[in-house]
Figure 1 (cartoon, rainbow, N blue to C red):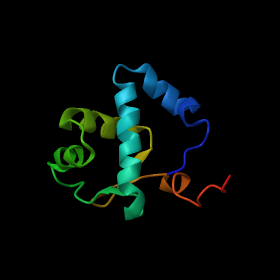
Figure 2: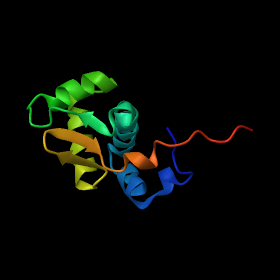
Figure 3: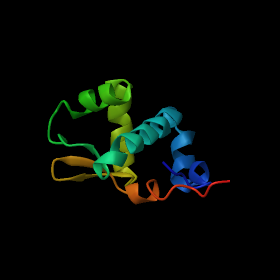
Length: 103
């Protein structure tokens, strides 16, 4: 996983972190990116199921309530999106790429 140096200073991340559950939402977002990396950006393939957030929460080790709130916020911010019955990380290509050069 690669993050831009300014990941935590991006406008939407700063706005998220100002909210009471913002830090938790950012952590959940990072966990969703990690979970989706090997699945071509797909975080969940049962987005049409009422149990999606419960299963997703169990997979990333968070509560269902926190996961549901984070997913809703991240969809609103266009960081996550629904494609058919899949929940995907909208900009997964930003986080997956070549390994950094050896030092």
